[in-house]
Structures are given as structure tokens and as C-alpha cells.
Length: 112
Length: 115
Image (cartoon, rainbow over all chains, first blue to last red):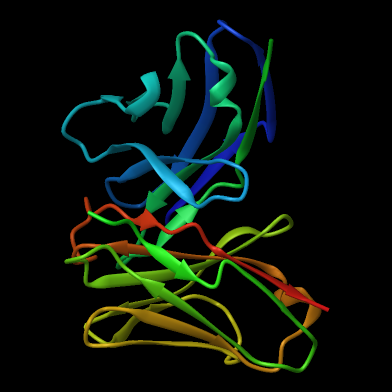
């Protein structure tokens, strides 16, 4: 069975500071992992995805994530937070068929 | 390419009524999935359609149903609405849906409020 756990439902960072959003996965097969972002009153937008080609994945808006098999983690980072990064972030793992399993989300607040 | 579109964006219904939500996938995408998003339960998978057939189903009661048309557009129906059905319903499309690297692209959602 596949699942993901996001540690920290709320994260606050100062503008310009490092953003680190945590995601750990559980998967009985090689996982395919995704990070999505959701702005208020909008759907989910794909930030990046891991499909086993490279462990460090670069996404849009300066975000990247590193797949660490030994730690079963796929944490999302951005070197310098911007006000426009304030949103809800979801980690997801692709399961059987085309079913995605989402984490509970992390709300990112950026303090000016 | 146009993204995934969902109509209507907002709906208000009363308990006991039924509702139909519509989703138009990205052109060329044949797989459509539906999710329910609530503050308490997060994002939960409802079902997936591919080539007009339900291919995968989540753990929701039979009041939740869907269908897909030959042009890949999909509808979701909820009958006998309950207060707990109030949620954001998200539709996602992907190319084939059977490749493990396939990506789901989401629409803006339909906000359903049940009074």
C-alpha cells in the first residue's frame, strides 16, 4: 500500500528564508512522488514529480525536492521564500492504477 | 492548450437534493479522476474513468457516481445530498493513466455547499 505523511500542518518562514516542507512516504513498490501547490479557491498545480530518473528534482517557481530512499523522504525546499509562495502544499504518491494518495497538506505562511 | 475546466464553480443545494458536476479534461487526455477535498478529511479519491469505463473506485457510498462520455468529458453525480457532502470537488485529467509516471492535472474545482 502507498501513503504519504506530511510533518507539520503549518509552517511559517520569513521572506527570504529557506523553505523546507517535509514528506515521508510508504510504498511497497518503487514510488512515484509528486508535490502540488494549492492557492486559495483554486485547484492543485503540479510543482514537481519524482519518477526515478534523478533523485534531485527541480520544479517550478524555484522549488526542488530530493528523493532519499534510505529515509523514505521527499522533502520540498526553496532557498529563499517569497510572499507569493504562501499557499497549501500537498505531497502525493501514485498508487495502484491511477489513484493518487495525498498527504494532509502543509500551509505555508511567509512573514514579510 | 486549455487546462482542465469544471462547471459550475459554486453550487448551493439543500439536503436530499441531487447534484451533477461537470469536468472537461485537457485535450487529448483520456483519464479523468475525481477527488473530494474537505478540511477534515483532506483529499480523497472518488473514482477514475478511462474510455467511458470506471477503472478505479475509492471508498465512497453508492450515492456518488460518475460517467465519462466519448469525448472524455466526465460528470459526477451525488444523490440524496447530506450536510457532510459539502466540499470542494476536484477533477484531474491525465493522458492515459496507466503509466506510473503519468501526471494528473487538476481543475479549479467545484465548491458544493449543502444546507
